[in-house]
Image (cartoon, rainbow, N blue to C red; front, side):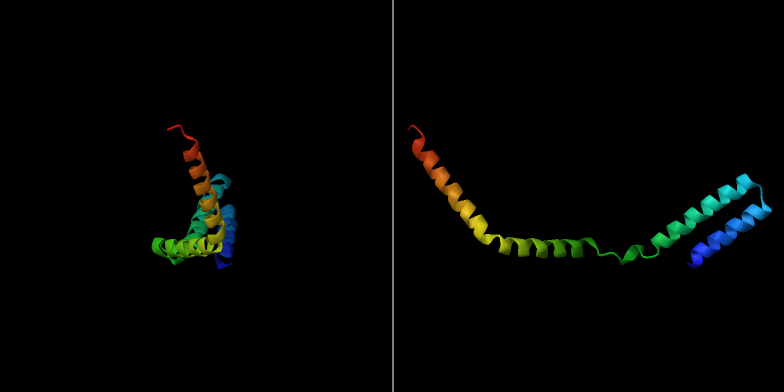
Length: 91
């Protein structure tokens, strides 16, 4: 909130003391820089690549365990289809 108050105070002073076009340019530029600084303050707090990949691998493992039976049924169906298809070939 301090950043917002500082930007507002700076904008008021700029418009009181400077030409309106120059004050608008300074206000827009200053507000943009303040917002970039505000958003960048926790730039290094995100997880790194290895941590994200480890989390994804854990989620995939849970999903793979949950769908084991369905994959086994699909595999059996596919193998039966392949065997049937192999029996139809002239040979």
